[in-house]
Length: 243
Image 1 (cartoon, rainbow, N blue to C red):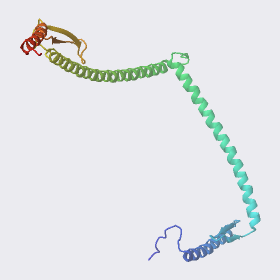
Image 2 (cartoon, one colour):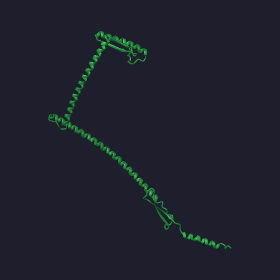
Image 3 (cartoon, rainbow, N blue to C red):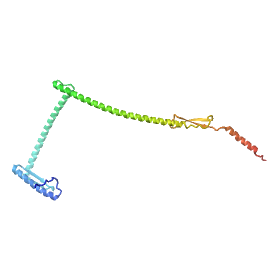
Image 4 (cartoon, rainbow, N blue to C red):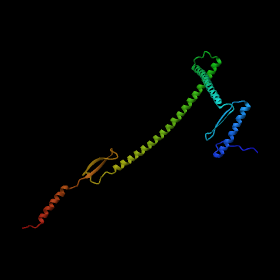
């Protein structure tokens, strides 16, 4: 029965982690030694534990291995920079050629620099222009249709608003007419017309609607005064004379 698959993740238990580190470090150093002997390779191996302890292995000298590594790394960096520069130069050349082709094609679409084209190229150019013109017209028709629909929608909304405003105006007009009728019906006509004095005031709600008020003067004022005087004289005649 085969061994179960081990999950590669950090071991939380300190003791188990230390035991696993010791076992796998020994196995790693054993494999490095075998690699150096079997393949005649120069091997240098450095390991730091979680506590900071150093473990190393080399079949020659660790100093020579490190120096050789630094030299190889510097050469690799220089080669990488040179290769990267050549790559960008090549990309720049490709982009310049593409830009030149696009500019030339643009001029041909404008009807310029057609001297180097044969009948087949001119036919292809004509087909391209017709296709482009068809797409432009289709896009224009679509935009115009959308704008017409939008304007129709706005027109319907404005028409609805106008109807609502017209109904509101009719309602206000009707209310004003009823208010005028009520104001005109409040005139005072209880006193005789020949003795009435008319005063005209303005309605508070509608300044154009006059309200007529009639104030009556008291009748037979003179007779009342004379009657008062006569009553006084009669009283004098009826009183007995005083000695």
